[in-house]
Length: 148
Image (cartoon, rainbow, N blue to C red; front, top):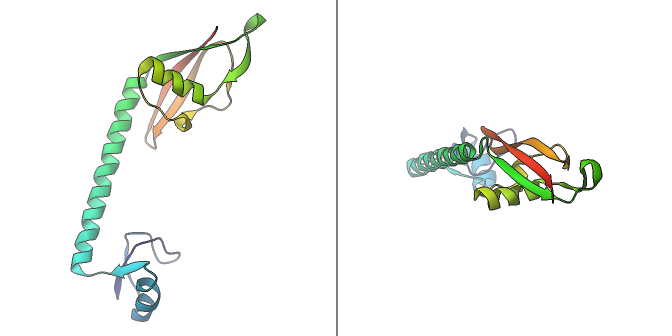
């Protein structure tokens, strides 16, 4: 019996896969628990439409990330922090503060979780910071830390 999986099933397949299983397993396990549904022609058409929609959404998300990456690429953001003698910074500059400054200075919305910092910035000067906007889109911005 052919069944469309509605969830990932270990050792059987991933969500959206069409698998051939025994009739008893399909009726007593997959269909009863809502893990799968019978692969009728109507259900197969619905599956094709869902996959096409998911691909369209993925393309739009990638295009939006690429557009945002082009707007950010090569820009500089200035972050003012308290500093002591010799350029020693009190505290540090975190990804949250960088995201806020990008919003204020460039007018672009970037999630702080997408800003890749190995460690918070603790020195004055210009530091290149990578931003991973999408699995396929990574850009870089210059963060200039100045004394306030």
